[in-house]
Length: 77
Image (cartoon, rainbow, N blue to C red; front, side, top):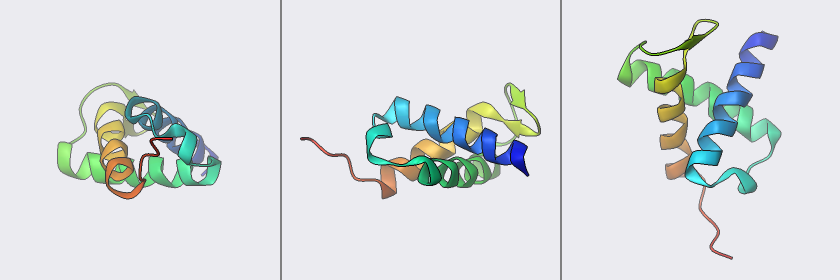
């Protein structure tokens, strides 16, 4: 359980850094985005690339980037 939370936070953080939406989300949101992104990414893109635990990182980050792009509005301030 703790391993999943840490991996979800890492995936959410990386996706936020890539999409430049990291300043708009808090720690709990980052974990949720990472966990949902991992599920979405591995469902649509498969289980390829480097793994951390049982999580394929590249599809998971892609899934988290999709979630961030759709649901978290970018602030242009």
